[in-house]
Image (cartoon, rainbow, N blue to C red; front, side, top):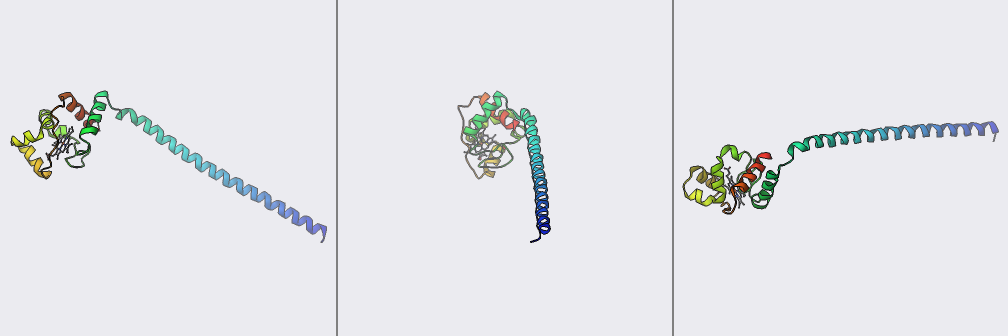
Length: 152
Ligand code: HEC
């Protein structure tokens, strides 16, 4: 083979290798930039979450209410509008007077038996499902549950 021909092939191969390296370099660069962009986006989310967190932090009273709610009410009630066994409790302090709620939670059956129209209608609407009575709850306990519901 003619040496000149061989040297042409060698320089063609060298050129290809250089092009290949350039190509891969570009790909790595683009890829790294994409990742950088993503991690920036995550950073923004984290910052947003952090700045929102203090606003939803619960007071001690609300935390006490949350614990009582989870242990005693959550099996039948949601803190949203959503009905479970009983009605969703969102906004309940706006639709019912506080004294009514206190009496109700301590003994719902007694309120229904007493003929309270709101209670009887609600009881019928919820297919006569019986709410548990909580005669041992202190007023502060029930109020802390309501404070928790209002905070949600
Ligand atoms: C076994 C299921 C059950 C449990 C547990 C329960 N409830 Fe109820 N609750 C109901 C049902 C059902 C109603 C609807 C009325 C009825 O059928 O007696 C209701 C109604 C209510 C209402 C009136 C809601 C409105 O929209 O006017 C309040 C307030 C309430 N419950 C608070 C509580 C609290 C606070 C707890 C926990 C301490 C609790 N309930 C635990 C089933 C339950």
